[in-house]
Length: 97
Image (cartoon, rainbow, N blue to C red; front, side, top):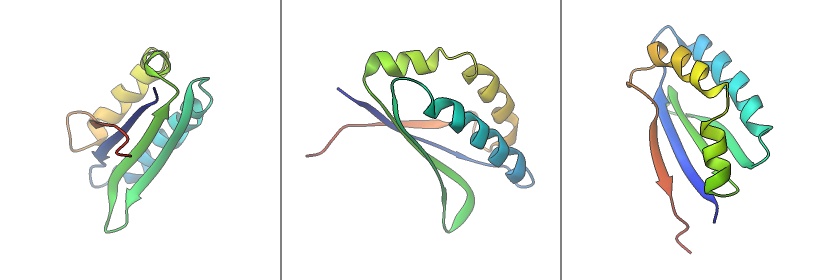
């Protein structure tokens, strides 16, 4: 079964360019993961500092491999002081139909 989630965070005012660069570089790496099916980065049209990242992994094992990737920890460490939240807010999704 696919593992699907939405990750949300808001760039601090003044950190928009740093966050954009970080997420762009991170997204390129995640998209190369064998079990990654989607890693789509969006900003909210009415609030461009608000990021929504739609992620789909082949299954739970692929998601766990993603969590263990060597670039994930450094990304989160670099992102943390640049966003308003303590960390990305994750919402796991199930298909409705």
